[in-house]
Structure formats: structure tokens, C-alpha cells
Image 1 (cartoon, rainbow, N blue to C red):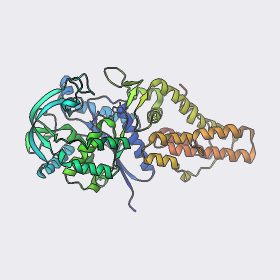
Image 2 (image 1 turned 135 degrees about the vertical axis):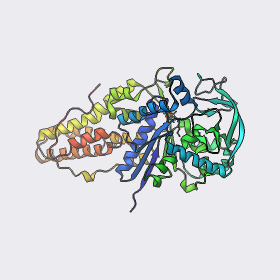
Image 3 (image 1 turned 90 degrees about the vertical axis):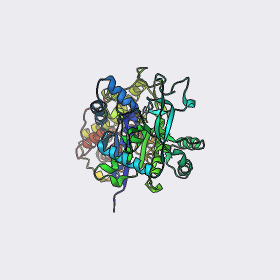
Image 4 (image 1 turned 60 degrees about the vertical axis):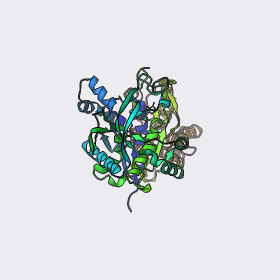
Amino acid sequence: MAKRRFYTTTPIYYVNDVPHVGHTYTTLAADVLARYHRLLGEEVFFLTGTDEHGLKVSQEAKEQNLSPKEFTDRVAPRFSSTWDSLNINYDFFIRTTDRNHERIVQKVLTKIYKKGFIYEGVYEGPYCVGCEKFLTEDELQNGVCPLHPNLIPTHIKEKNYFFKLSHFQEKLSRLFSSREIILPRERRNEILGKLKEELKDLSISRAGVPWGISVPWDKEQTIYVWVDALLNYYSATQFVKGKKKFWPADLHLIGKDILWFHTVVWYAILLAAGFSPQKLPKKVFAHGFFTVEGQKMSKSLGNVIAPDDLVEQFGVDGTRYLLLSEFPFGADGDISLSRFRERYNADLANGVGNLAARVAKLCETSGFDFEDTPTSYFFSKPLKSSLSEYRIDEALSDIWLNTKAGIHTLDKTIDKKKPWTLSGKKLYKNLLGAASIVRHIAYQLQPFMPETAEKIQKQFAGPKIKASPPLFPRL
Ligand code: MSP
């Protein structure tokens, strides 16, 4: 029987930025789901990468006296190496300056052009370089983009090619209301609400931005960076060897800030290019946004948290745990380093770390052998059901709180049964039960905290189980 497949993606991040916890959050979530699906025996394609064209990137390159290509080559590895340092196991890292990607973007655009969904016009209005987005006068607040109040929007008047987005208004409404593509539900309602207002055509080329993919039928123009970027999800499946079968994506993971592009714009492009409803991406899940100690994370406030700093303080798995469990996936939430420290000590040092140490020590002192049957481990029902709805924080908390085999439950059972007062068969049975629950916990930790899971699995492989240094030293 053919294996089930799972194709998941993250946004491709603007290459000029330095990776921060926001980018890390999405990419970690994708890693957890990819690892989980691999453990279920599925064939997985996990795609991430960098968005490298557009005005923002070329301006930054100029400031550094580099050509855009020199600049992007220099900075793109900041993302891939951050993902490596967090043990994020992506299958392919796409860069939009890859010739293969560029070729496929041109091919798709030509198709849309030939189908009559692109026409020439004049664009006039404000443009926010920070968002790489055309704004309407209504979107401005006090003359500036609300998301980039320090940037004065550029006023643009130029010849552009326009995409007939308006043509797809009804189709998109029908699609998003009849199928549960957009998640969580509030986000779907938000898009359906917006689709009730008149949809305007979208300018999809730029005249004055040479750093981009050229429009195939008009070399004076480059393709709008968002159209180029969105198509990465398709292009990677076409040029990375053996990945064609993964299209359409099962899940696009994004932050709520880019939902409009990933639903209305992205699906309209695909419909215009002739993709049938069965060949459209299946789910788009928009998670919430972090604030740091109650404030928006921003360079100017100096409160941007670098993933490397977290890894230095909490370790790789500590960072993975703290970010994914801090607040419900999908909702907005606040993070603070002091709360991270508290939770590190409570859930990791005193929680899973202490439990593994405690059980290992008891097993070692008992002198018994504890044979393992690794094939008998599985994911709990609540964990599975949480992950099937992308409630990653809930899936993770089940490993701690599960009333049958959770970390806290086992801790309490040990306190109650006091194995140190037992001996002989009774002691053996009791410890074997505890050891197999720890093994089960390690099995379930694999997608979330792969290194910790492996350490526990090795320690508890049996037949002899021995104490070892703490997994999470107290801070
Ligand atoms: N290049 C575009 C995406 C193109 S995808 C075809 C882009 N890049 S970005 O570098 O700005 O990354 C945006 C994404 O980073 C968000 O959608 C979200 O996934 C993540 N986050 C950025 N800041 C964040 C927070 N403060 N909190 C949570 N996630 C955030 O937009």
C-alpha cells in the first residue's frame, strides 16, 4: 500500500532580517508536525526558506555596499543555521533567487497571462516597503502604515500589470465557506467577512524594482515580490527531485499577519493558473503573535529575542518546549524570560528531568533487570486528537497531565506507592511499571524534544537502568 504523505511549509522569511523568536515559533511548529507524521510512518516533505527579492532586500544590500545577490548569499545561511541549531529537521531550504524557482514562477505567470487574467494598467498610491505591500488610503494611520510607523510610505505612480483578483471573489467565498481550509475558525470568519467587501485587482509587477524576477513578456518589469514568494510552495515540489507527488500542500503554517496573502491572493493565483479544487492546498493555519513583556517585539524597542540566546540559557529542547507550550497555538500571547525560567525549573528540571532521574535511581538501586519492548509504545489519544487540529500546546501538555501515564501522574503514584519501602516481586512490578511509563513518555516527547527523548530512551533501554546526570539542570 502506498504510504500516506504529509507536506508542510513555513513562510519564507525576509532574508534581510535576523531570525527571531517569531520566525522560530512557526518553524518549530512545522518541525513538530513533520516529525510526528514521520513517526506515524508517513512520507513527509517539510519546506522552509528565504524570501530574497524586492525593494526591502535591495535597499539593505545597498546600505551595506553589496550587490543584492552578494548580500542574500551572505545572509541566507543565518536562517538555515538557526534552524539547524534548534534541531529543526526541514527537508529543503528554498531561496527565491534559485534559478529553478525563478523559471517556474515565470512559467506560472505566463500561463495566467495567456488565460487573460493579467492586464496592463497604471498604479498610483502608497506602498509600504516594510510589508512589501500596496496600501489603500484607508489603511494608513496618520499617513503611515500601522505596522511600520517609522517608515514613510513611498508614493508610487507607474505602469504595472494587474491581476484580476476581483474575478475570483465569488469562487473564493464559496471555496472558503464550503471547505474548512482556513484555521482557526476566527481567522476563517475574518477572511469570509473581508470577501463580502469589493475585491480590488492586484498589481503584480513593479517598474522601478530591478531586484526581482522579470515579467516574461515585458523585461522592463519585475514580478511583485509576494507573487514570487507564494509560488515557492509550488515551485519546490516541481524542481526538488522526487517531490512532485507532494503537491498540493497539506498545511501552510503562517502567522496571522500574512493570512490575506496566503488565502485570497494565493488561492486566486492557483485558480487562475488552472489548478482544480482538488489540487489546491488543503489547510492554512494562522497562529497568533508574540509580544515580549507586554510589548510588540521590535528592533527599535530593543526587545527582540534571538533564538540563540534562548538556546544558551535553556538548551535546545528547553527552548523548543518553552516556546511551544507558552500559550495556545493560534492565539496571541506574551512571553517573558522570567516566566520562561520559572517554567523551565517547574516543568523541565523538577518535572520530566526529575522524574527520569528518580525512576532511574530506584531501578539502579534495586539491581533488577528491566527488559524493554520498544514496539509497544504509541501516541495517546488526546495527544493525537490535539495534533490533528494543530493544538500543539495541548498535545504537549498531555505528556505532563495525562491522568494515566503523564509525568505528574507518575510522580504522584511514586509518592503514594513509595517503592523504597517495597521489596522482592512487589518492588520489581512497581519499578517495571514506572520504567515503562517513562519509556512511553520518551516516545511521545520525540516530535517536541527529540534530543531529550533519545537520551531517556537510551537510558531506559534496559535491561539495566542506571542513573545519569540531570537532563535539565536547575537554573
Ligand atoms: N516574506 C514574507 C512571507 C512570504 S511567504 C510566501 C514574510 N516574511 S517575515 O520574515 O516577515 O515573516 C513573517 C512570519 O514570521 C509571520 O507570518 C510569522 O510566521 C512569523 N512572525 C514574525 N513575527 C512574529 C511574532 N511577533 N510572533 C509570532 N510570529 C511572528 O512575511
